[in-house]
Image 1 (cartoon, rainbow, N blue to C red):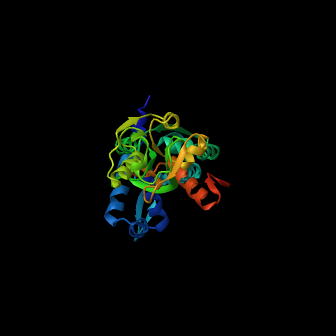
Image 2: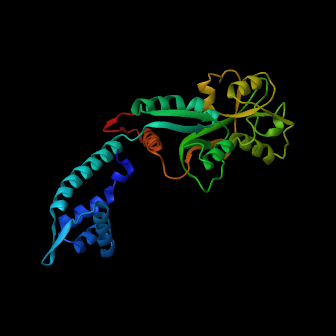
Amino acid sequence: MPNILSMRTFDLDSLEIFRTVVREGGVVRAAARLHRVQSNVTTRIKQLEQRLGVALFRRQGRTLALTPAGDALLVHAERLLRLADEAESALRADPARGPFRLGSMESTAGSRLPKLLSRYHRLHPGVVIELQTGTTGALLRKLADYQLDAAFVGEPFSAPDLNSQPVFEEELVLITGKQNPPVQQAGELLTGTILAFPGGCSYRRKLEDWFATGEVMPRRVMEFASYQAIIACVAAGTGCAIVPVSVLHALRATSEVRQHALPEPIGTSRTHLAWNGTPSPALERLLALLAALQEKRPAFAGPEAVTA
C-alpha cells in the first residue's frame, strides 16, 4: 500500500499559482495578479513539475501552452479549488463550534449571563460553553496563560497585553444590615468589617478605595466565595459589602439589606469582555451578539439573522 503522505504531492497554494498562470496566459501577468515576484511564481511551477514528475507547460512562441499532463491537472485543480472555496464558505457561514472557555465574575455570571448565554446557545448550538467564575485578577491571569478564551472582568483592571471592550455598566451600592442608618462615609458604619471575595476582586478594591478616601481602615476583611453568602452575612449585621444592584435584583435580596449610594467614580463600574490574541469564531459570535443587544438589532446566527 502506498504511503498516503507521499501521495500528497501538491498543496492548494501551488494549484492556485498553476491555475492563475493558465488563466493569465503567462508567468508575468500571473505574478501581478497574485502579488508575487515573477521568480517566485516560476520557482513554484518548477517545484510542482518536479514533485509530479511531468512537464505542465511547453513554450509556444512567446507564450506558454499546457501539455497533456497540464490539461489533466487543470481539471483536478479547478475541482479541488472549488471544493476548498465551498468548504471555507460553509465554515464562514457558521464556524462557531466546539468548546468555548468563558470566564466571568460571580456578579456577571449571576445577573447578566443567564439570558445572554441562553440566547447565544439558541443561535449557536454547536458551541459548548465551559463557564468558570473567579475574581477579575484570577480571570486575567488565566487569560494571559491562554487557559480561557475570553472573560467578563470588572474595573479597575490593567491588562495592556489583552484586548477588551466594555459590555455592561453596573450601578454599585454599599449594603449593610437594615439597622444601620444612612451612610455617606465609611466612618458612619456601625461595623467596619468588609465582606468580600478574595483578593483580586475589582469591586472589593473599589470599597477599600472608598474607605481610604475617608481615611478609615476596615477592622477586618472576611472573604467569601458567593454573593449569597455575602448578602446573608450582611443581613445578619456582620459587616458591609459592595454589590451591583443587578445582583440584588437577580437574587431577590433587595428587601433583606439596606442600600446606600456610593460617590462617583466608586458607585459605577463597567464590565469588560477581555480576550488574548485573535478572537476565536465562538468569541466573534459572542461579540456580535453583545453588539446586537446593545443596538437592539438582529444578531448574526450563521446563514440567517435571528432577532436577539
